[in-house]
Length: 168
Image (tube, rainbow, N blue to C red; front, side, top):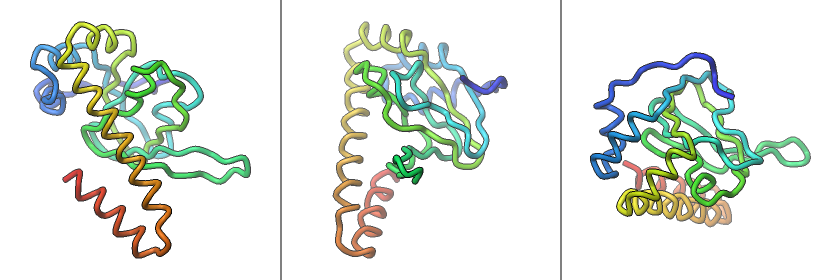
């Protein structure tokens, strides 16, 4: 499922990315994380089933994509450093409908689904952070659908630029 090689990440750096969680939860998430490195085109999370782990992008980029019946790839969105991938699938117990694919070399922290759910069930503030992340993803996806519905290329580019600016 994962590449055979894992790499340590300084716990302080990972905890900075987890700073939206209560400190004790960030420390526990850091402790249970498994750091993985990926090469261009490798599938970080496979679609079609509930994710076994939630990934947080640490370095590089990921894209969410699905393949149509005709074999064409449909890009749903890009992920940037610090974003979680698969949180809605893990929390909701729903299938992850797309693949998360490495774009160039990238690094992720993986949090086992059952361990993550135990943490979220035991800490309301942590659960709220996860709920906000899921809400943000749903909001971003809705904006993307709206942007793709724009009649002109210029309007679509403007919508994508607004999304990227919102993450900086």
